[in-house]
Image (cartoon, rainbow, N blue to C red; front, side, top):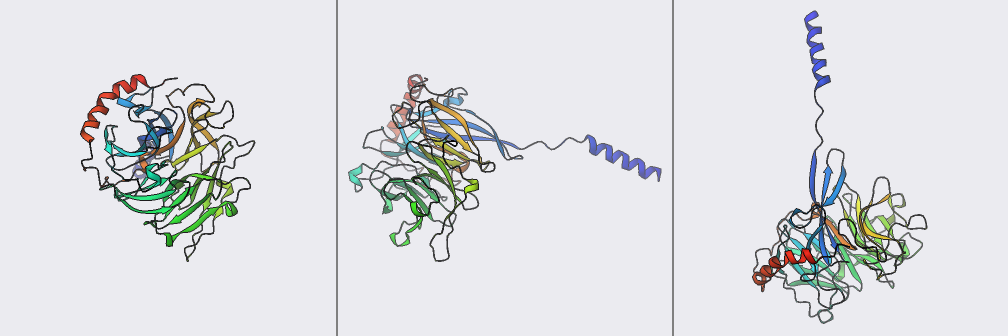
Length: 394
């Protein structure tokens, strides 16, 4: 009996001094399209998988710069709007602000320019298409692009840049795709703003209205921009009312057996802009982080007071906690109208994407030799150092 007690005592003692299992920590990249400086910034996030929390977001710019987040772009290869990625590249909307020329280009995951995807947009508003965000399909074969200026959403083959299908929709600015292949498209035009659903081929016969002003559940303006689908199939929507305060609207889309939608606004998990909830102004892109929270690009005044914005407002990346329904600014940009860039070099973000939301498949067109890619790549590599020296630091 004494031997058994002794053995138990040793076992209990060992259990008491055994070290606890260490938390599982992962790092990754968050990419931010900085409209104010026409560049792409890169940040490293630290994710505690055990506690499901992002514990830090710090600059991780060109060549691993830990003080300035500038990663690529600038005057020679300006970044204009949206971003997505695959297992082997980054896909970016490029072009000069105010110009009618918009391109979609590939970069390596390390930031080297590969080339422009050869898409012929001439049939759409004579090529003046004004692309918002972009979305690559999970298989890496196709990409959806909303042509805001031209008033269409198109499906593009990444293998050769051909436009597979299109749907005419004025003001299309962001897209999201559900697990069943349904494509949601947001239009934030003041007249007829809505979120629609189409099948994966964008067939007009599949059109259904998901949310409109009449069933949005908000009393003020409904002007949807950024879209993100949560793991449970619910939809997060940036409601950009121009002049603020903006909202984050969380919807159960209520898809019925006949394909129609009866949406319900989940007010308890939404951020409804008001005089007391006024943290968001002129919001566009959003992205769900690995922690399940929604990160929002608040363009604000565009970095120089170009847009209607409250004086003193700080453009930047904001985090909306999906558990506590609170809003926190996690990266400072420009304090409007002329406060200079934030401490990490961010001016005014318009879109963002976590690498955890990149598709796991490779880009179907990654190995395609694109026109003038080799020469452009050499020029881009040679210009990276100059771009870093020329970028605005505030």
